[in-house]
Each structure stands twice: as structure tokens, then as C-alpha cells.
Length: 124
Image (cartoon, rainbow, N blue to C red; front, side, top):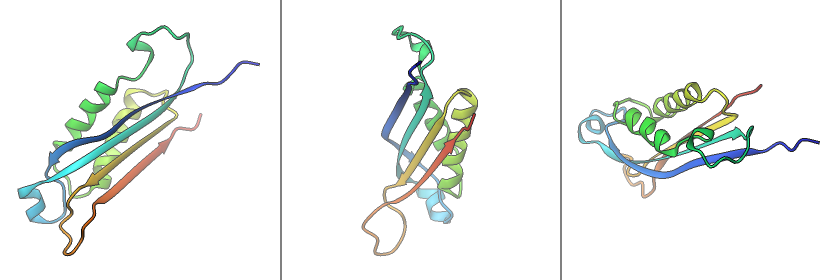
């Protein structure tokens, strides 16, 4: 029997200042966000200790950074765009998850944060 293995590469709570939101003031003043990304992919080769045999979390960060720099109305849109770019870049990914947290949403009386999460499962 051949063992099936998978690898998970993650970034957790990467901080960005961005101008996402449906309110005009959010687009002007901006807000603090945290982005977490997790990808799962099959391990198909030997353990060769080479960056080309894995997914670079530095590259995941650069994708998130570029997309967070583009103002959008909805965090859902940003999360889906990040997920799509990741899955296009690494077509062999089995599952990707992008979570975006607006740390101080402009909701009167709220003491918490607002969060969206997109999970994409690529079925073979």
C-alpha cells in the first residue's frame, strides 16, 4: 500500500492597513486587518529540502499584500480573489482557506472584530 500524505502551509494573522468597506469613511480613513491563509497540497515526491517542492509562504504573503492594497467594498471579494490567485498559481492545491479579520469594524457599540472566511476545495 502506498501512503497518501499531504502538507499544510499557513500564514497566521498577517497585519495590513487597508481601505476596504462599504462606507465612504472606511475607504478614506482605512482600517487594520489580519489575514490568515492555509493551503493543503499532496506530497508527491521525496523529502528533498528544496523550496521548489513546497509552497512558499513568502509568496503567499506577497499575494495577500497585493490584494489587500486594492480597495474593495467587501472583504468577501478580497478573500475570494486571494483564494483564486493562489489556486491558479498552484493548481495542485487540494484546499485553500483565506480568512480576513477587520479589527475595528465601524459598528456602534461593537467591542469585537468582523471576520470572513473563504474555503475552496479542488476536487480531482
